[in-house]
Length: 237
Image 1 (spheres, rainbow, N blue to C red):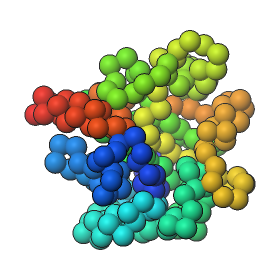
Image 2: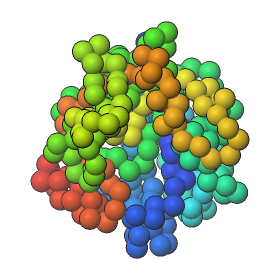
Image 3: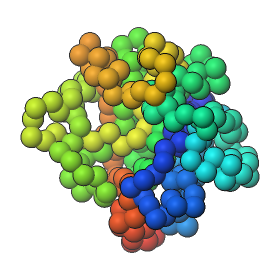
Image 4: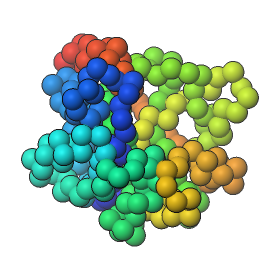
């Protein structure tokens, strides 16, 4: 398929684990390696062919909008969640009128990675709307920076994903970027809800797939992880 040209960037969270760095700014504007987290993600998406990004805003929304106004690539449109923070599923549902009808990237703003391959192109090649509801970019749990927990998924030889379930651990973690249909969350409830239950239903039907980053993933969820990510980026240069 051709590369998705639209992305939904989830930037409305409160960033409570990132305090005190988010006492005066949204998490999206916390800097790693001299660049705001949201710019790390938007730059990756632009390189992958995204021309249009819809960004949801809530915490310090005015400041984030002002920052985004300086960007020319991709073009930015705002999905305003000032009145109510809607979580991942609710955010995608609210933004639906802005997303068009073709498959879209959906991306968190707390992932930074060093890419030894071409992760987003791999995800594009994997995506098949006839067989899949979502295609997720994964990282190996071992060696990732800032990720806590036993992992999220097992990965089949065909790329199909199985949730960890009752297992003590699983080798792969979702690293914050996926491709899906823009209407995937349309039938979710009104108000805030997570994409996770939708993914679980899709996995049970054999319609949740993934591919693995060839590189180093940094989940920048708190100040310590930010410092570790900054050190890792510095070591790479």
